[in-house]
Length: 265
Image (cartoon, rainbow, N blue to C red; front, side, top):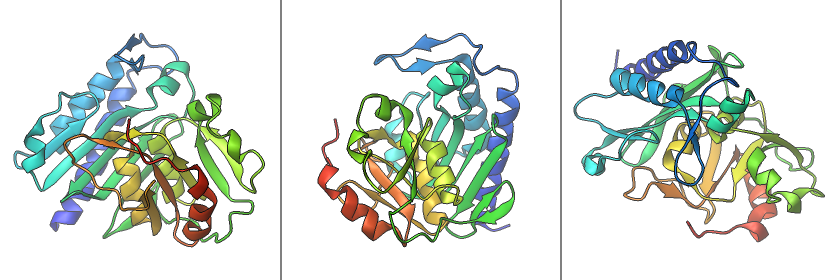
């Protein structure tokens, strides 16, 4: 087993351990606390974080997780795990099956392997730049659509509620609201939708696994200023991103250009 295969195996093992932990909890019937900014957190978030830390991390690697204190030693590491133990906690709490465990392996700032697991829908999407993407064990890739006309786009449910997608109501796109951004990116990587984007800031742990998967599936992910996504930064926050199949990217970016904001808040 070479290094890439070993990382791939570790991701799969970590997600399986996380699935086992989550089987102890019931989505829609769990006590919820709230962090600053009114973001929900549950015992499930913390339990998955602990098992992923134990399963994935090796002494020479860095760690960045939503539910762990940020150890800036990671900035000195070539290899870093970027993890969201439960992306879409709000949906998990409300019993909406649009959440997932999100795991990415970053090398020199680039997410080169990742995986997401949604136990509620029994979906496992894993991939690496070397091996490609696998959806429930079967090879998958981003769609080959080249036109925005009729393209299926997964939109943030909360962003839609705030009216941030109103400008696209009369566009040629087929917009579908959904929870977890990591889950949306995974579905784009597996060819279950044509594109997704967020025009508002996201933390690295929200999107690292999804970025690895989309790029491993032959797709394109760009920041709002049309640059590659770089991870393991001192301030782990991105202005937003756009993810799609490579053939659709030029026309989609042209459609979105008037609406892009590049300031990280």
